Length: 245
Image 1: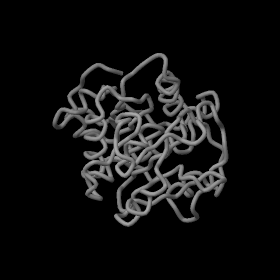
Image 2 (image 1 turned 90 degrees about the vertical axis):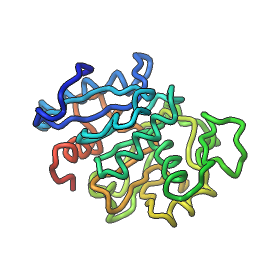
Image 3 (image 1 turned 120 degrees about the horizontal axis):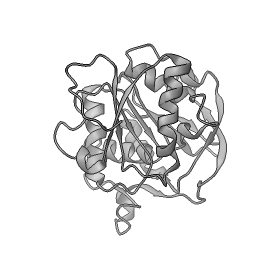
């Protein structure tokens, strides 16, 4: 998956997997299996290239890809690289999926570059940040190894992909959005379309973007990896230029 190619001469959709690849991160290990399953079960063949977060910081690092997935595995070696990748996908209309840490950093990027909160911070990356600057904070109860229900907003992209208003999802995280920052993100166009049974935000999407979806849960960990989660399948379809609804 890491062999460089000339992006100008291939017609197979190319996806950038942004993250610091590790055999100790479950979602990273699952990715090759999901790519095989997408090809075999769905006929969705993708060329996937892993881009370390440090490399993603370079100008144009993710330009030209057909889709971008910001994967779990925080703290990233380069927060700046993760945020730069999200911004490129958001501004250039590149289909984007962010899961777990990808969700968390999507909110930080939006707060900084759309909402004008220049000091917006993630508590894991900046434990000494002022409370008023934190967009991502430690969860009251860690969700590492947790499974729980998520209710989605009717008519949302998430609902159309999942095909239901309620789904059971798997987590592996200890950080989530600060509740007192959600209003400013919403006021600037970000839409929160999924929450747990207590109303805590679990899904974000960006209306008007070809495909911009971020989940605090990890759809890549659903099942045994032989049947891609509907969100993973929808992302692959978006990368291929196909309808996802």
